[in-house]
Image (cartoon, rainbow, N blue to C red; front, side):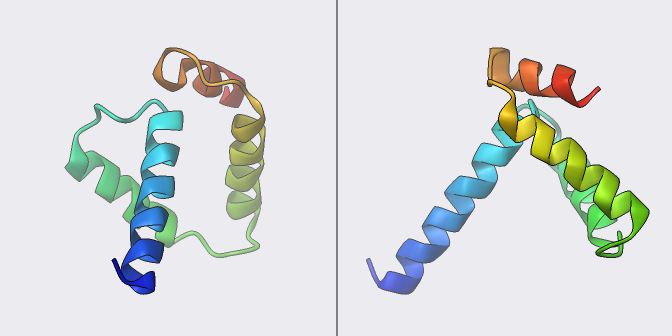
Length: 76
């Protein structure tokens, strides 16, 4: 495996872990892609960006139990 392919595989693995952590591993793929496309429209540094980033920071601190349920509860 080339270094570029290895790096790409690791990035995909890490992104998949975020989906699992969010409790969305069984969500419809079109739904996930739509949500990500909407997130891509949020301007970096905007109040909405900062709010969502804060939610994510807290979620990373929460333990992952029941397919991400603890993280979802921490984000509420």
